[in-house]
Length: 367
Ligand code: SF4
Image 1 (cartoon, protein in one colour):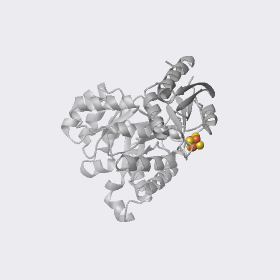
Image 2 (tube, rainbow, N blue to C red):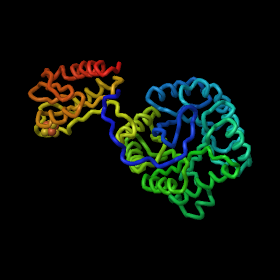
Image 3 (cartoon, rainbow, N blue to C red):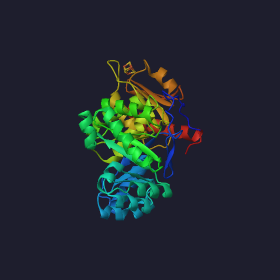
Image 4 (cartoon, rainbow, N blue to C red):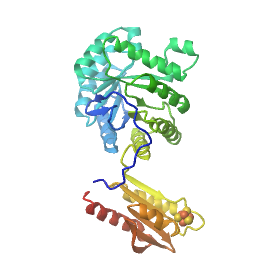
């Protein structure tokens, strides 16, 4: 078994229908999944597959690739065949790329039928091809590319406008009997985004893909995504998430996973319970916490590790943790499962914790 305590999430999940994105279920009782998007030129097959491998190693479960040109569409069969995780083709206007993506074995397509209808109305054919191939479609409404008609009606990209747009897009597929859909209604402002998803969650039972679009550089984007996803997931809304950062996509995956872990929607991996330190601290807690984090990060063991600056709260926190250290006087009291097992010099704290973590993993049958 997994040693960390399984805690209850904040709310019952909203009841959504389940779709399959390749091998990954989305919606229904499926765990919330983490997605990202490649930043390579899709036509560069090797670079794209390399980035997908890195994303997969970081824990990404579904990956999206942009398909703006014929060269990109031509690369899809190889990418879909060799990617270890399901690939979603992201297409804007061209129906022919949608058919190419379905033929290529992509697990899903992100396309807004409203765009297709405007230029070359082959929505019915797309519905038929997707349905025959068992390929779901994501309708992705973004504040930045909201339909002209709705912009005129609402003046700006309000939650109502985003939701009306998304449900209208869905209706274009529904009129062809196609309902294998999931939806996103992204906005850069978490407040508008949260309101939009709440409204959407009430109005349909399609699975929802959460995203704050153009969330920004890592710090701001992480905060915006954590706040917005946190608010929605805490209400049970959201079936798959993508954190958008102006940063390498692996960072998006790390943040996405950490958000799910923080909400108990994912078993926590390494969790460092470290004190903020105060005037009583007798070691540099910040550095120690970082060294412990770095030293234990690679271990495939879910662990809660307490790193405390002094012995005032050390024993209390350590009792709840798998491992712990309470420092003082250039030494560290090492706790394992709540008991002090030894005291080591400060310089040996990290290596001792790693040693004890490995022993603990072995005792618990995880290697
Ligand atoms: Fe201060 Fe000790 Fe608490 Fe850390 S554990 S915040 S050093 S009292």
